[in-house]
Image (cartoon, rainbow, N blue to C red; front, side):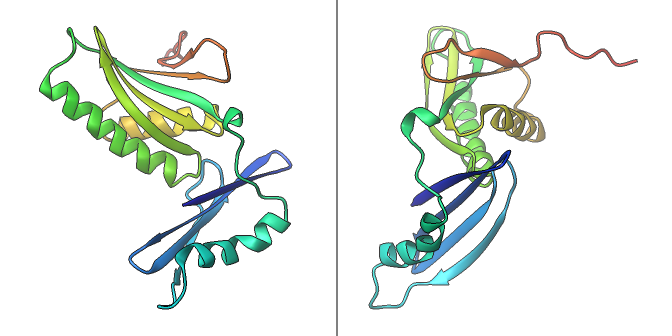
Length: 175
């Protein structure tokens, strides 16, 4: 898989490509949006990586580049668990990991790095390009699948301490 990004004014744009079963899928758009995609068949005698490189060539010339590791932020989804958690908690963590892999991947914003459970807390770790947009995407995805209850979403860049972005510290009161 190849992922490229470019800042275009106030918009961060993504372009990515990967091969599966003889077809290269190319997916592009603005970070946070579902974007567009196309399928490029890989000729039988050609290396899929060469097809991806050919598809990416014009974008690299236009300033798209792979992100530096420190350009990405950390996004965490946490749930409180009893002890090290139960089998149900483990299944929930796997469901959250799968959901966020799709939600962040198809919006060009990042990827799930894995999860962990330690005494009292279960976490899913993600690396994202735009933490505020990613937090909105994650909260919407969790809410749509009824996995938001009890979740805390935190973000951090570099060495900063993770800050809670959900639930909000001061929720808006509905009248």
